[in-house]
Amino acid sequence: MKPIKTILLTTDFSETSLKAFDHGRTLAEMFGAKLVVVYVEEDKLPPLVVEYTAVGLDKILKEQTNRAVQRLDAFVREHLGEEIEVLARVATGTPHLEIVRLAEEFGADLIVMATHGRGFISHAILGSTTERVVRHAPCPVYIVRDTHDGKAAD
Image (tube, rainbow, N blue to C red):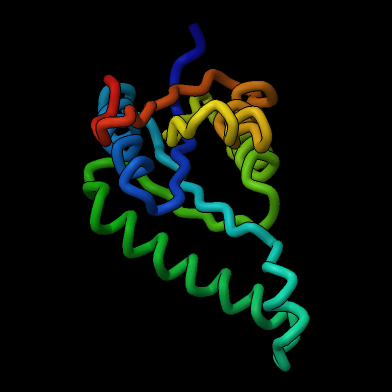
């Protein structure tokens, strides 16, 4: 087994993704690994927002990204200790594609992410970001599942 030196940890700022933070932090401490915490800002806005705003799309997306950077930095400071090396990154695009791209870019040895465990219909129609990452990831993916009762399945 290849040593785990870099762990890519994803977040969407939800309670479910916060459960993955606990696992990511523990794994980073166990292996003495660096954590790369990633949030992906989708680069799409609802059609009504684009159609009825006087502000340009580029400006709106840039402001969204700036807010996401600030939020991610605060989220990381609040939920991860300073005992481990952490690098926070905000990417813009399609979540599963950006997660896989960043895992490759940072040479991640493991991806840690949560899954919301939505119902069958939602999954069948939309698929899941987690499933898409698992299919395309350049390394193993550690999934923290949120059960229907709101407790993480360990």
